[in-house]
Amino acid sequence: MGAVCHVDLLSILRRIPNHKLCMTAISASAPGKIILFGEHAVVYGRPAIAVPIHQVKAKAIIFPAPRMSPGSIFIQAPDIGMEANLIELPQDNPLAASIQVVLKELNISHPPAFKLRITSTIPLAAGMGSGAAVSAAIIRVLSNFLGQPLPDHRVSDLVFEIEKIHHGTPSGIDNTVITHGMPTFFIRDRMGHNTIATFRVAQPFTIVIADTGISSPTSITVGDVREGWRQNPDYYETLFDEVGKVVLSAREAIENGQIEDLGRLMDENHSLLGDMGVSSQELDRLVKIAKNEGALGAKLSGGGRGGNIIVLVYNTSADQIAECLRLAGAVRTLTAVIR
Figure 1 (cartoon, helix red, strand yellow):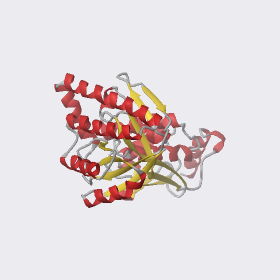
Figure 2 (cartoon, rainbow, N blue to C red):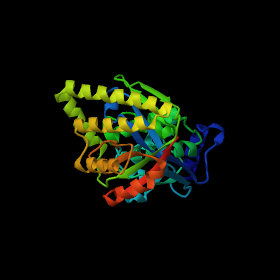
Figure 3 (spheres, helix red, strand yellow):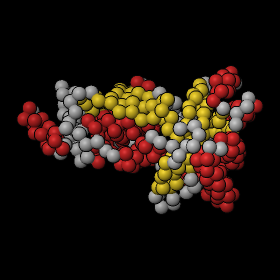
Figure 4 (tube, one colour):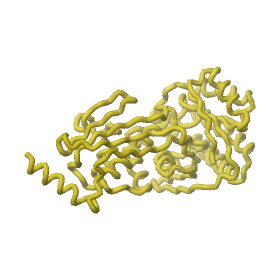
């Protein structure tokens, strides 16, 4: 057995440039994200704007395990109560799939044994890209561990493949923003080609993210919108067109520092999302409370029917509005400055 293990390891090392296999614990992380404008319509070729939220993140750590059998991979994800060997997990498990896409990408079938620990402070099913961030962190740490760090654009491509497990028909915006870590204007056309552009924020602005505490998997709302579109395409295409106009105006407002205009556009986008059927009484209630407390604008963010609202505020009123939202039932709030 010793000779076989020795040959397997050498064959792996030959595929790693300069034998840069990492033999100490290493880590990688990826931020959360929030969609400012354009959710749902972005799946149908309209633009969207999203920003990374660095106050929350997913983190992946790899510990080399030379005493384990070559090829053995043990996964710990305490946030979801998981401890399992890779071979025990189904292929469509997102954690397992994130590992497998890297091994396939690097053409490594029997990696050195290691333990992978994954943690995240990004709320689950809240429209903040928790799944994409976990995948990005795993892909980065594993490719680094194997001595072949992947460039951002390739990490993004691989995360998108994993996102199909989470969401069925992902837009491509989560993997893009989370991987690149910058405010992004994004369009994915009907042929699946991405147009990605970072852009200038002329005047930093403050948002409060308020979590309803209601879990609402994005795959369900995306599927419901698709079904509505299939049954009444003209109606939904009109809604998507209107959202697209809002997004273009929002980018112009951000680039010109027109923050009050940005608030009005958030209100308009929320109304259009309601027309698509992805808002809810609780989301609408919190939006109304934020507006009554002096917010410049407010809207749901992400899949809808739960998860978060985002509230545009003056920096001086952020704490007050956040407190009011918590008193009104938001389970948590997070204040972020977008630069």
